[in-house]
Image (cartoon, rainbow over all chains, first blue to last red; front, side, top):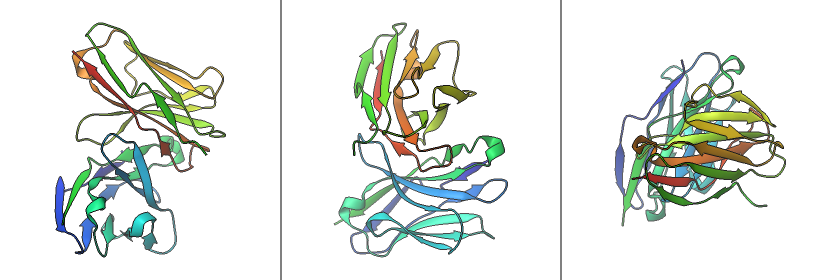
Length: 115
Length: 113
């Protein structure tokens, strides 16, 4: 069965510093990986995805993620965090067609960017 | 273009009462999803529709939960009767097809007293 692990419940970072949110996954076949962000009382917003190609994926709002097949990781990064980046971040993996292309989410990581 | 619309945004009911949630997906999106999100956790799929057909409802507690998407557009998720443990956020999402990017609505926060 496919799964996603986000080992950190919360990440604290000072504004202007680099931000990293960790994610590891387990899935059969080629991984299709996603990052979503959730602000209070709002639905999930898509940030970026990895399907194939370059291991460094660039997404919305200055975020990027690095796919590492050998470590089965897909860490989210931002070179310079903003206070407005404070939110809940979810990593997700999409399963194979045989598994219904089901999207499985990690437990989420809360990011707090302090001024 | 309007995003995924859900109503109501908030609902408070007493246990054993029925409740229904409504979702209108993005126009042209054939695939519709209902997710359950408990506090501090990631969303978990309840049911997925391809047009009007429920193609994955393995995680839907069928003794009390039901869903429909009669015309292949908007959808309703119902709980009858509600239990205290059903308190959560119910998210609706849609995508062009089963492999397309999913767009989420704002969710309905249910509180069962």
